[in-house]
Length: 448
Image (cartoon, rainbow, N blue to C red):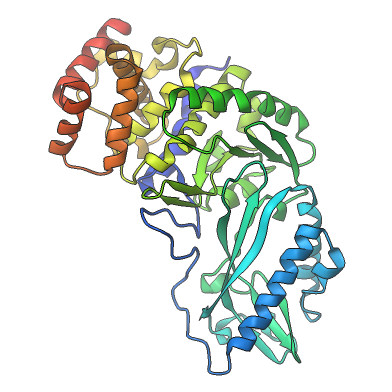
């Protein structure tokens, strides 16, 4: 089993970026995470109203084109798929689309469709000339969403924004480019199939989506996925899909495309992501556990088990977690579930905290959110403190009380200190000051 501090560093680095959005999940580029229904992902500034000639017939024609493209992908009809591409398109784009078609062949889909937004079009005059110089009768850049669902992983479809440029020749419309709008702020979302052929392995409670050459790691994940889902479900009381899509990218570049361009992918082992969250209806779309292409392969089986259970806890609880909830609560609880039944003692799993307690005494207060935006040992310490606090509540008040504390505080989101004290008194019979004093006493005994 790897040193616990090293595993904590990886997990800690993951959430350091997560907390910037006030979530326990990464906020993906072009994805909505909000309390109410989404208006549609990927809407850049600078959109212009369609010109008078951009009438319903144009929208109908492009909708038909997108429908044919989607059907060709689902039916694995390469000829029909290629027929939707602009004959005047750059050959590099056509080659990329051929690879996309081939790479998707191994992905079981419950849905793959496109939604056109004709009233949200960009000014094609602003598109770089290398994409517009080839002959055409008309160019159009309306907003388009990809709507898809991975069979075995998604209960409901999710949507991601696409940056499509269309060209008309005579009466026929074609797709000319999916990169022409990058400089205008409308980028095409890239999935695993944009990088390499996909291999999907199905389990009772989910899927592992990987690429050729990853079978040893996939076999490990397949053995651990279902037991991890059951372990989380055993503790988490509210309904959730109990379906998990685990993605194993091949490169840091691919992982960055899946979790966000500014994410420190070289420093993490795993991260939970979601495309859209509606707490009012308890609807979550596009949940994934994305693993590091390098770090995860070096984990021992016990460490991998802890990592998976930690991330799956975030998925299970996401519908009940409002943005802005205390990070010590979200990460402490996820760690509690991850380490539960692992046999790892507090001293083994929290070496930095043990050192702090022995040298300087227990923490003076609850871990602050800003501590999770730090790095190195400070970040590890924030995680270890949060985990130990969750352990204290569970061992002192019972697991039911720990779960109740999570549900009440996470459902409240960002609240005042007074409201936090009220919730804690209702659940634990003590306010923050009393909670901290009891926790300090617990740490002195457990880490002496």
